[in-house]
Image 1: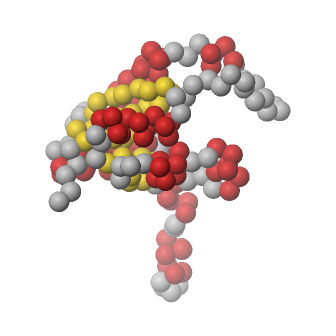
Image 2: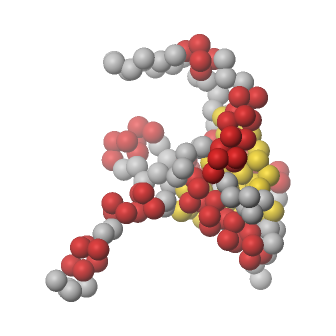
Length: 167
């Protein structure tokens, strides 16, 4: 029998991650689970690559502290998380895949729920996929959720009608 006592939801503080929160909160109600909302603040690299035409405010990146990340997560929770979604907000610093996996093991998490951004092609190669890395490396089951704004352009009514030969 599956018992989801502890569910971990990851966030990058984008609205995409709210899709994962919806699924996790539904499962949490069903299993009376404790929900953790984890934000991993990436460490600033020692050498920042410069891209032509892209201005980078290095001082702003260097001055970011764990307290800033804590404040950003608190604002995200206040603005986007429904009051009945009782979550424990957590901030870690480091590589997101490593920190997510480490937190899951340390806390005895039963399920990780995370949203995907739906990047493909060159964007996927350039930015990588944290969700993909977690799915491949996690010792804990992972549920990935595709947010509505990502799903909608992929499948539309015309596609469905065409596939079902309704037109």
